[in-house]
Length: 387
Image (cartoon, rainbow, N blue to C red):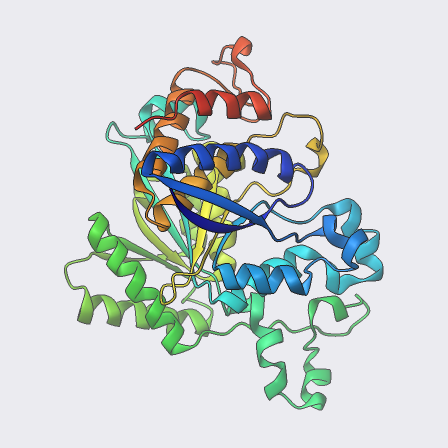
């Protein structure tokens, strides 16, 4: 049986409990394709602090980058952010680990699929009549680099110190709250947007979906830049793919009418982060969210849930593992393990159709006798794995 090595970050909070279920599902599903998944632990997060004095140990970072495929369980915990993090602010792992991995690996494309189906309409936070019979595909592709998340860090070296002082250009951990002015630099490079747009338009063409470009071009110059490049790439290179320009504020309102956002949705780092989280809640809940961050040139990738680490649920065996499990399906498909990926998605849909729920998904219409904890939900998915 062929082996494939995957870097594993179990994460903080309830992350390890959810990842335990996801890993065993992934291992079993991959065997349907004759593939043995070997998870190599590359610890990151507050869970590494006691042993390493760091939330991103250099050995873990280098090995994860070398392997090139990361199954990421989420990092961060307010309890430690407010204690250790208050003394060592640069160590807060949501910025240190996540942003560093994205930068080091060039993870430009953040795929976050949101699929509405009528049979799961009661799980959605929108009126059932808003979901058409054929369902809705929303493929959010967040631009994961540059923007305001990296601006001060990336551009500080080009700016004289007196200008930085005058404008209050600081890194996150340097902000005290006593400043007269603080500036956050947001930027896009032409070649990066072009690479991103080409990948998104290509995906939309293959999926027979329109591209919906989210911007704030009525106010912000960087989004005029964004919109003009999107329009040019669409017109010159993908004339058969419909392109819709959508302002971010009105786009936010469309989360409640999902069919109006049917398509491949391209959006900047900050806007994409906010809107896709809202879309995940609208479609059912953050516990179901799954995503991939991909370098379109090298194939390097990281797979994670958007549910965070749920630190208040740690050790209670109640956190929803389905987002992590579905992220595992995305990972298998990315490395060519197609039967296993399909089997996971079919199994998860089967479990939900049969009425099984974790606490975050349970509604008044559901059978409370089918309420499951983390490990029991993993068991139900495992039972249904087959070609």
